Every structure is written in structure tokens, then in C-alpha cells.
Length: 157
Image (cartoon, one colour):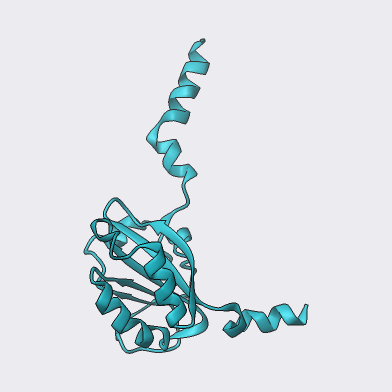
């Protein structure tokens, strides 16, 4: 193997390149400029995970705000989540979403089956599951398509 091939292999195997291949957390969470967003119970290092966080995002502080595009809710107690989800879903637009994050060590409490049942009970669906970092996983809850404002647009096409 010549030097150029060796250097190329080293670059492609490097963490820097591998990290660039991954979608940023901002993209995974679908945070767009001008998104109206509420974050609840986030870890103190939350924004350090997203150096590309859009400055135009409207971070809402009032936990009772409505007309939100996105809520990112961190919870480690499934019963509290079950209790709070009905209120949270009333705070977002019908085409909005709620990301529910929980500590990895609680994966048995927040498993796929339980999260799907919880979503269904609240007339929502789970559309995505991601790893926030080494400590948190997250599920994306959205309203069913029939209740989604985008359906009207699809009907027009």
C-alpha cells in the first residue's frame, strides 16, 4: 500500500470522518430554523450536543405554551410520561412532534411496545427512535396522518 492509500484509509477510518457521516442531532430531531420549541427536563449539556442549533429557533420557556412545533421532553419515569403526554400533545400543532427522551438504563421501562401503546392511547404514533448520546434514547411521537394538516395538502395533489 502506498502512502496516499495509507493516508486515505487512515482518514476514512478516523472518528472525524465517521462523525461527519452521521446526521447531526439537530437534523435527527428535525429542528428547523424558526421552529417554535419547548424543551423540558433537559440535561445541562443539551446544547453542547448541537453546535449547529439554528439561532432562529424560538425557544419557549413557559411550559404551558401552546402552538408549538416541537417539544423535547426528558423523563425517567414512564408513569409520569403517561400522565403528562395528554397535556403535551395539546400544546403542539397537529403537524408538530414530541420527542420523548429517557436514560438508556431505563430501556425496559420505555421499550418499543410500551411506547407504541402509549402513543396509540393518545391518538399518536411513534415514527422514529434515535440515540441522543451515550446516556439518552428518544422516540418521536406525531399525530396520525388522518389528523395531520399535511393530509389536506396531499389530498390537493
